[in-house]
Structures are given as structure tokens and as C-alpha cells.
Length: 243
Image 1: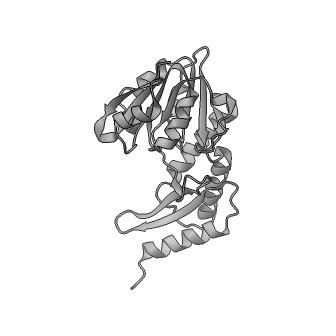
Image 2: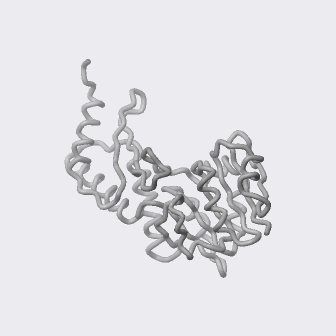
Image 3: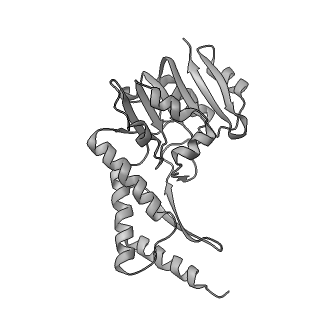
């Protein structure tokens, strides 16, 4: 089969990646699509026994998230306590929450990679492509902007960062007694059981993408929690700790 110019470009981009010495634990993958061309994907290796495949780092915008969980942005912007963003990836939703200065507000991003390390790797990849005059793949600019903005917010203190993988069952104390917890990446029922432990009484956990019913979640969590369905087609729910 004859190699197309775009496929050849993908090989050049992969060669650049192979020469990088990454500081993060993230794998850069170049996928060739006949319609879109070269696409950059960011993959995080499984780090607990509960995961068997690489996890794709997402970059859902706050607008996209609002479509999955309607009303969430308003809920976030009114909260004045502790908010956790679990498995946030490169979403801008913590940045939206940090735009208003509210007394007592504490914003914590929880993920399994370090934002500054990923920012450095993405910048070095971008610089190497520029130096060799190789066109950049789709998503690189988007990922670099998102990682840079989140890294800056963490550096300035408007966001806090905690490195933790749910399923490890060694929850850091700084994550406990949360008023609002957000996880939109399709948590398993096993990790939900751990995540609800983060909530203070009256606190809420917003989730989406979980392939189980409201009744099943309620049965698994027990009488201390109530579960309400938000958008059936997105499998999105809010779980409240009631006692």
C-alpha cells in the first residue's frame, strides 16, 4: 500500500516523540485518520489493579460538560465550600470555578498525572516540531493551552492539586469533607463507593458515563445516600450524602 503524505507526516511526528525524554507519565500517541489527518492522543498507563488499559486524558470544555450535566456550572459558581474535580484531565471547568473570589472556597483538582510535567512535555514536543518545520498534529495546541492554564492556576494557588488514583483506598485527608465532588469520566461502581466517602453530610457527588442504573447505585451505597438521575442519555447522576 502506498504511503500518503499525511501518513508520512504522522511518522515524522512519531519520530520526534520517540526522541523526547518525557518528564510526565503520559504517552503521546499519533493516530492517523483519513479525514482529519494526524491526531494527538494523551494516554495515561494503568496504575492500580483496577485498571487494565491505558486511560485517555480528556479535555472536555465547560460547555460540553454542561450539556452532559445541565445546571452544573451554576451549581459550581454558587458553591462556597470545598470542590473536588476528580479525573479532570485538561478540562477548563476548575478555571471557570476559580473566576469568582468567594470566601471559604477551596478548589482541588485530583488526577494521576502532574500538570507541570505534562505542560513541559507538550511544550518540548511543540518546540521540536517548530524547529524542524514539521506541522503539528490536531489537538496539540488545545492540550498545550489547557495544561498551561491549569499549571499556572495551581502555581498561583487559585487551584490546589492532589495526585491520587481512586481504587487505591488510601484517601488523602485533604480530600475529605467536600461540599461538591465532580467526576464526569465514567467512574466504576467500585470507585464511586470510595468517592462518596469524600462528602460531608449534605455534600453532593456529580457523575456521568456510568453504565448502571440509579437503583443499582442506591443499593450499592446504602441508606446514607440518595441518588437522582439528571440526564438519562448521558447516564448522569447526583449522589447526596444525607446522613
